[in-house]
Image 1 (cartoon, helix red, strand yellow):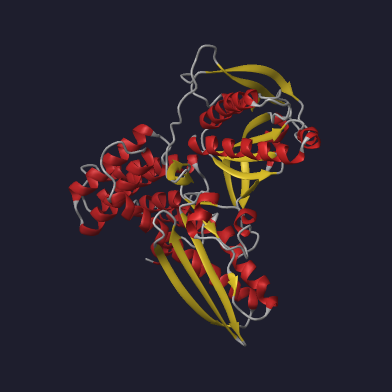
Image 2 (cartoon, rainbow, N blue to C red):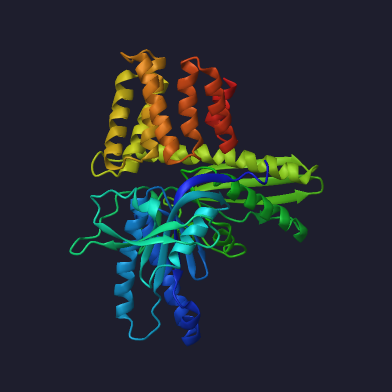
Length: 473
């Protein structure tokens, strides 16, 4: 595993900053910190409700990522309205106001930390906003549907520090007399609040620091290194939101049960483990826990000889990551089979479709596969960018071709390629998108194109079992 392998993707980036935070802290440090933290917590929930991921909170600033510009704008405008109401209720002048900037660009994600020109531009745009305001890059406004109740006031071309070309900037506001749009993206990241799980964002997992069970405190670096590497590698999976290292390590040497950790971090799954050294041998144990039920989904023990310490660390990381990601997917698919057929979100419908398509392929049931693809279409009617549903549609077309179930075999493969192209357009870092396209190219005997896509999937995620199996096959 190369340490410099990073996840790159095109994303909509939101950067928020507290106006005059130093002045607020000087007035009353404890109260200012409490209210700033409350504001960021409320904003993180709003971001999750609109399908975004709050990647980082850096002191008095927050960075979030969205797939759709419309969701980022809606979350920003919605939060500013709510935060204004919260501030009015305070009977003193310690009122945290935020400025928000939104950009579109390529970013790099590692250890759940997001960097790149897109982040820098969002930060620069935020500095153009008034307190309580939202400023967008011009290209962001162009992708927001006209049906949404927003208006954009041009600030003209702005000279932005660190960027060679001027950037068109716009102020985003809610149209007069209009209501804020309700969140359109509903999926499965769960945050426990007041004793009940609340659905937000996407599947999330926390990797807790592995416990050093050896008598030698010097082995602490190894247990921390394993944890760091697992966090980094799991961040390659776009369907998972991995809790940042700083948040996970706040539980190091701190007694807490699974439910408490889930409540504080807002995660579906927790990976915990321990490391024990005895002379020249090392034993690593790992356990994956579903936080809702407290059920142990997976567990494994690894015994290794101590030779090359860094090679050993990489080997263990790849084994753990390669094992737990299929287990998370399997647990979610099993959960989807128990869902009722009414009032399901796009994500839940997509999960049902995916589980049904896997069953259909396994038992070669044509009607079952058609039903799975129909459910995937229902999910796409709710959310046209639902990647799980698109994956099922693309995969379904390939297997319709393989089993001879399509009246237009060539058309089935063409449609699979179109779906894969759409998936790649939504998220170029999603390795499974390239696998669907590689399958279709392979069965069209376009082997060079297929091999290029398999290799690209391998570059994006060396641990994805589906790609490793297909390439070997």
